[in-house]
Structures are given as C-alpha cells and as structure tokens.
Image (cartoon, rainbow, N blue to C red; front, top):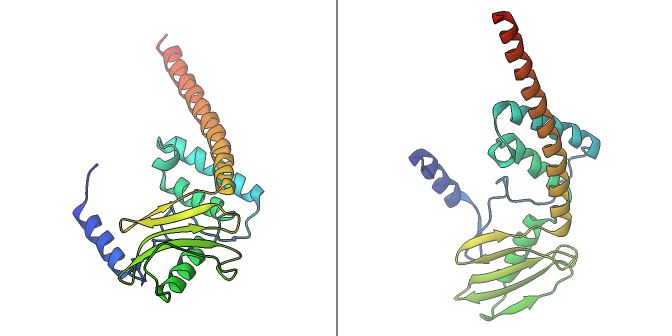
Length: 195
C-alpha cells in the first residue's frame, strides 16, 4: 500500500477535529464504510437504475465494486436506508456513560437509548476503555476498544448489500459481454478489410 504524505496529514487533521465524548473520539460517520440511518426518499426502483448505471460506468472504466468511489458512495446511501441509527446510539450512549461514575463493566439498558438500544461498557479513570453498542433488535452494531472502532453489519444491512451486489454484478457482467462482443465485431471488421 502506498502512503501519500499529504493524505496522511489530512487524515490526522480530520481525526483531531472530530468530537470526543468520555475520552472517546467519535467515528467518522462521513466514511463510506460506516453506515448510519438515513432516509433519502429514493425508491428501490430508482436505486436499481442508479446501481445498473454505476455498474456500466465502472465496467467501462475497468473498475469493480469497491475499486470505484461511485460504487462506495452509492452503497452507503443504499444500505443506510435500513441501517440502525449508529450515530445516535453511539453519541447518546457515550454521553450518558460519561455521566456515570462506576469504573467497572456495566450494562446500560435505557429505553431512551434510541428505541431500546443498549450499550455495555468499561470505564477507567473516567474514560471509556471498552464499549459495545446494540440496536433495538439486540444486534451488535459497533464496538470501541484499543482506542479504535469496529462496525458490525446488521442482518438487514447484509441483505441490502447482497441485493445491491446482485444487481450490480449482473449489470457489470452484461456490460462486459457487450464490450467484448463489440470489440470482437471491430476486430472482425478489421480482418475483413485486410482481405
């Protein structure tokens, strides 16, 4: 992997400007790989058209799925339609925990934590050392440990990603076949002109 110094400095600046709660730096929710609930008002039919268009565009550019920034942005929008409110769960959970005093493993079970969401955590010297975040369905959606975040996809998110990839892969494959048959026709036309 090649590291660009300017990009590295930019990422460090972005990290240092993100909000901290209870000594924990919040995840970068603008990252294309971190999904949180958003409702765009776009229908599944409109999404399907956009996915097909993106697949055709990517195939022409020689890119496939995660190699394409357009694919990643579209995936974030498409999957976030069914995502839990990770931003709310994490922000509200950390805010409430920062007010708690005990420094031991404890489970918070507040109905107010985003529709029956739950957080389990361990504090040390007032800072969160470890935390698990659960949505209202009881699915773990994120953890914080070793000063870093890990996001976990829910069943609904996984199903939505699979649906998107199915549409995309089919369209990408059809575009590849069309490009191949088009190039073969051009080659045949060139051979015919030589004869």
